[in-house]
Length: 102
Image 1 (cartoon, rainbow, N blue to C red):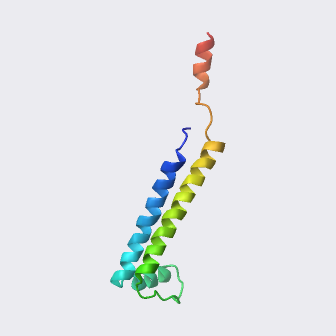
Image 2 (cartoon, rainbow, N blue to C red):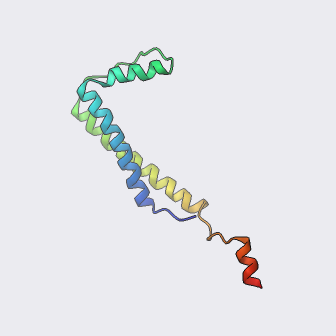
Image 3 (cartoon, rainbow, N blue to C red):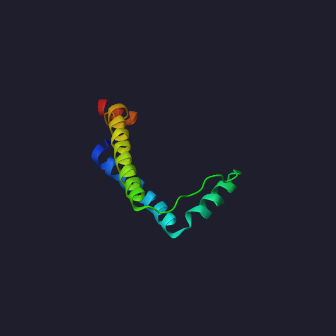
């Protein structure tokens, strides 16, 4: 299995988290978030009790910054764990070993 560059994984996860939350921010800004939240909760047979707050630029930018940093840290950590515990020497098929000995 190949090694993963922790920085690349961190950037990828950070961008994914930030883009995902950018969609949420746009939904809140346009006023669609509450209806979507109610719909999704009802699909799960949950009575909606949560209310989406009014849009706030400070909160929106804070959400993006936090999720991007959290995503980067998650990707970096997972790649580091992968490299430490999963990456091994290249796999050699048993048939290849027998043909080399002959």
